[in-house]
Length: 195
Image 1 (tube, rainbow, N blue to C red):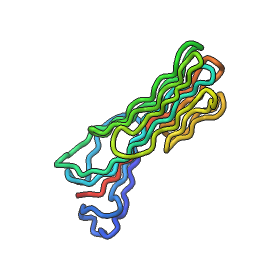
Image 2: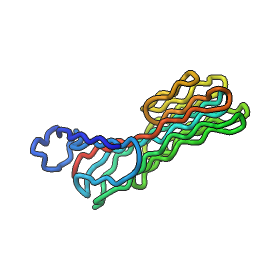
Image 3: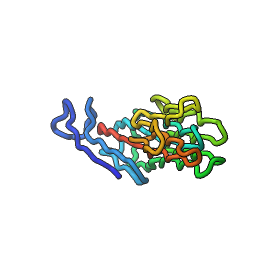
C-alpha cells in the first residue's frame, strides 16, 4: 500500500525540481514491495525505514519492536529504486516455540532489520531491531519481567493479552501461555526534494 502526497516546496513555487527545505513529494509504503521512481535521477532523498515487529513468544515473552533508520542522501543518476516493507513476525504456536522475527525493510541498498521474536521456555526476546543504516532510534526491547510487547518509533506494542499491537514495527504480545500475537508490519517514508 502506498500513499503519495504532493507537498509544496518552500522557496520553490515554480515546481522546477530544484531541491529546497520542504520535500516536493512524500510517498509512504506500508506493505509489499515495488519500485520507487524519483522526481529526478539525481534527487535528494530522506528515507525513513521501519522493520517488522517481532512476534510474541510463549508465556510472558513478547516480541520486540523494530528500530528506525533515517537516511538522507543524493541519488547518482538512478531512475528507480527497489523497496520492500518487512512483514510483522508471526507469534508462537505452542508453549515450546518462539515468536518469529519481523521482516527486514529495504530501500535500494538501505536496510532496517525487524524486531526479534519472543523466545519460548522462560527467555524473553530482549534484543530490539537496531538501525543498520544511517541514524535513528533502536526499537523497544521486551523482558519477561515486563511482559508488554516492544514499541517502535511508529508503533505501540500491546500491554495485555489478546490485544493487537498498533502502528508500524511494534512487537507482538505473548498470549494464553502458548500462542503469541503477531508483530505489526514495517514502514517506508520517502521524502523527495528533487535535484
